[in-house]
Length: 382
Ligand code: ADP
Image (cartoon, rainbow, N blue to C red):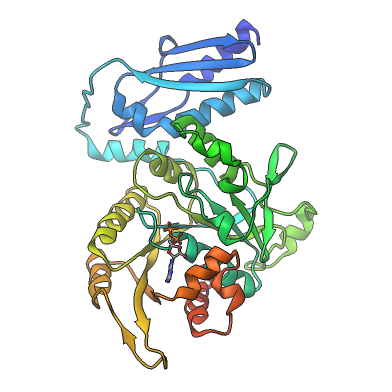
C-alpha cells in the first residue's frame, strides 16, 4: 500500500454523502486517520456528532471496506467511528430542500441476481419471523418460482436449524454459494460460524461485514447466464430462470442502527410484518412499521401469528389472547391484515426437526394459509 493509495482511500471516503438532518454531510480529510500494521489497515473516522456516527455505523463501515478492498483486497480492514463533539443538530429551515437532499442520499443498492426482495420483519425476536420466512419461501417455491432465503438475524439465527443446514457454504469468485435446501437457495450466519465463534460479541463493523456478505456477497443467480439477446427476447413478465424471483430476508429484530442501515443500504421491494397478539409485540412491530415507512419501503401487510388454537375436531377456533385487536391495529395503521396463523405444535416441532411445516404437511389446512400468502406475493408482482 503506497502513500498515493492512502490518499486515494481518504479522498474516496470524503466523497461519501450522509444525511445530517436534511443537510449533506461529508467527512474532511482531517477527520480520517489511516494506519497500517502488518496486514491490518485501520481507519479511524471522526464524526462531528455521535448521532451521525451511530446512524451510519454499518453503512459507512461497508462503504469504507469496499473502497479499501477495491484498492487492495488482501488487507484485513478495521473501521472505527468516533465523535469528539457534542450533538448540536442543525435544523434546516427549508423543508422542501431537505427532502430533495434526503432523496439524493438514500440510494439503496439493488441486490444482483434478484428480482424482488421481501423483508419479513417484526421489530422483535421470537414471534415467528423465521417460521414465516421458511414456510413462505417453500410455498413460493412449490408454485414454481426461484426463491432465496437469507437469515440476517445475526444475534439469533434460526434459519440454519429450520432448513437443516449445518455446514459452511462454498465460495466461488469471492462470492458465497448458497446452500440449496428444500429447493430454496439459503444462507444463514449460523452455518458460517462454529460454536467457539458464537462467544464473540458482534460489534458494529463485524455485523455489517457479515450482513453485507450474506446480502450482496452471495451468488443468488445461476451461473449459466443467458445472452442479452435471449434476455431481451423474453416477453415482459416471463421468468428469467437465472435470477431469483424472490429473496426472502428474515429481518433482524429491533429498530436500531443495524436495521436502519439495512433499509438504507438495500432495495427492498416490500416488507411483510408479523406479530403475535400481545401488546408487547404490537409495540415493537409499530416501531418496525415506522422504520420501513421512514425510508418509503412498501409494507405489504401484517400476519398475526399464534392467533388461535383449534379444537380437536377442527370445527372451532379458540382465541387465548383475545380476538380482533390486530385487525383493529391494521386498520388504524392503514395496512392490510394478511392472515392469522394458529398455534400448532407441529409448526414448532417441524422447525426444530429441520423440515419446515409446509414441506412435511403441504396438504394440511395450515399450509393453505402460507399458500394464500404466497399467492398474494405473486399477485403483487405479476
Ligand atoms: P423469530 O424468527 O421471530 O425469532 P421463530 O420463527 O424462530 O421466531 O419462532 C419462535 C419459536 O416459536 C420457534 O420455536 C417456532 O418454531 C415457534 N413458533 C412460531 N410460530 C409458531 C406457531 N404458529 N405455532 C407454534 N409454534 C410456533
